[in-house]
Image 1 (spheres, rainbow, N blue to C red):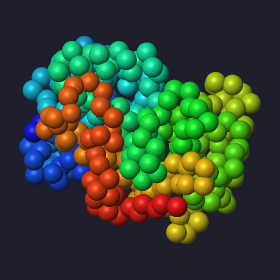
Image 2 (cartoon, helix red, strand yellow):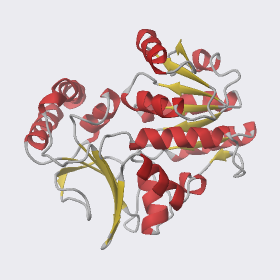
Image 3 (cartoon, rainbow, N blue to C red):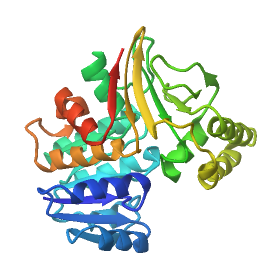
Image 4 (spheres, one colour):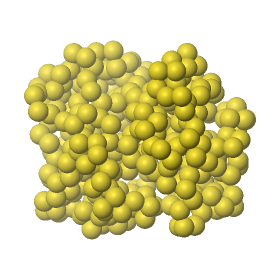
Length: 324
């Protein structure tokens, strides 16, 4: 099969490309990035399977010219709220299956348009194949027992979703930008979550960082940036990215963890090295390229990947799933 990785030079895209290069069923990988130099360097150093291409994926015409003959797209370009819609609609227009890392729930209007486009094209897609959304949905469906997908406006009965991360070991600029722009008031740690500082996010989810220097420094930057409005938040994102190496987590802290909590019940997965979201994106793209018998349109992730399969992906990445 032939798979294109969008945003291949970024944090998630690079790890997804490495994972795909190890899959015997993947015969060719097209590494697409706005930085052709980085994409070429990665392709040459990774595998003879890899080729490289440059594209501004926010421009449908530019992206569509690269999709001829592609079996599936693994989209790791962020922020998702800016790029998911144009990328997924471009894939649907070319009849190419697509898995997108996502960043929170798609607005209902966008979700409906994307679903209709893929149904009309007769191919499947999944939006939200990273840590949150992605692993949080698998945990809710298979380990917590709450199968409803994340709503645009969560109700009191929806499980609380959270993502905990160590800034020095997890996330690229787009991810850190979304945290800096969206982090709100401090909130108590969700049930079953690692110890740390937690902040409310606009979609009803929660983001957290370790206690100590990492938490104090990141919180200080985010709070200072927030007082200056939109420009301050952009500056805060850049500062977090530049200074992330000076935000070490306490020994034994995972690179990332995500989970869901509903009442006294909780489920979480700990990612020791920060590659679990990329592994899920790669696995989803391979499954979509194989044209699963699940129909066309936007598919719920938990219908494509079951509990045993989720456990297998986590185990291969050295991750641990905990249920309470």
